Image (cartoon, rainbow, N blue to C red):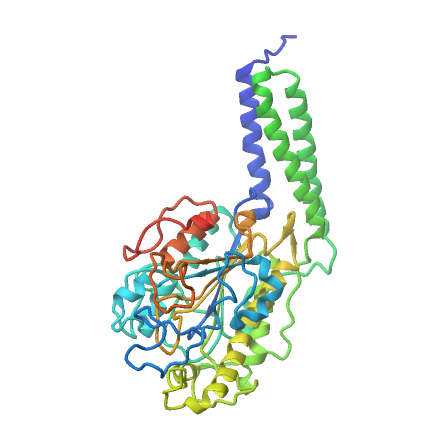
Length: 490
């Protein structure tokens, strides 16, 4: 029998075969098998109507032409200016339990909206640019984005790398709104599902629950993966005895990788069962911002649960959840108004020199209750992700969740200093529990009202894209102050 010659060329050929086999093995279990340090899913939590802040579109706090009329509250800002997120602002208080998972970015502008809006932060234009950073068809209410939103941009990339039943899951708690932020492509707005029952029927039509136990098919696949891993480790061990010292480190690197896969395979035992959410009693969407019986308070949690269960079942890698600019009339509302956006505008008249200065306390209580309820829905989403084991951690660890709005101060239509809150660890890429204020003038005096920044959502989205392992150096149009990702999200 002819003896097979084992030399460097044969080693490299064998090693190359393993290099090919392992990625194929990982692919059979989707992105849970992806390398660490890379995000696996992206969710946008979009709250229409702005936050409880007072940044004017010019950059100052308050209205320079009507001094003393505006409220002077910034309840979105944290309790201190340190880089560690120790004290959450009053508006985001419901997220206290997830503080270590949050990264708060302040001093971030919608530069694309600022430069195109008819009067700085126009409703339609700001909605069209906040998630797209794109050029638009106009600067007015009818503005349409000429580029995809960040969620759909990533959905298309991830669909190529890891196909799923739904490229994205797009839900909305309907309300009175003035524009559309989610775009599949240039000029193509993405429709969202507003009816809980309709969303359930569409998403879970082909889902079979596992009732808490792995199915025979799951056990078979798991055993096959374990067998392949065991065989690969044995092959590597044999090869290690027959190669030169200079090549041993290659074998060690492959062995370490395979062992990491074994750990992830063991962690699959802890995966939450794929179950369907309970949509019993869900109100019916009536369109025009309403639900049967006025049931926003019922529809919101059910829609969130639908999204959580959809991700647990591996139905998608991307999701968007929009909250319309609704009034939370089931909560204490000492300040009465007709529309959610009108509540924001009322803040421009409750200052000491405003026409409704006597209603300042009532306005504050009403809008804080409103925004806390919205943030509470985000807390429900984060809790669902964090309570679901995945790999060596949980689903939130491997996710990026973005909270934002088309405005900072809603009443002022401000496209400056917008809410930008990230949740999740991006697969271990981010540490969480951090706060970064890009207002260059805040370093010397955080209480002063002036403002200067060179950061826009172009940079934030570039960082998010890179968190998924892509090498893009820019996202959006050319209205950004600078290009590239944020060093703090490297």
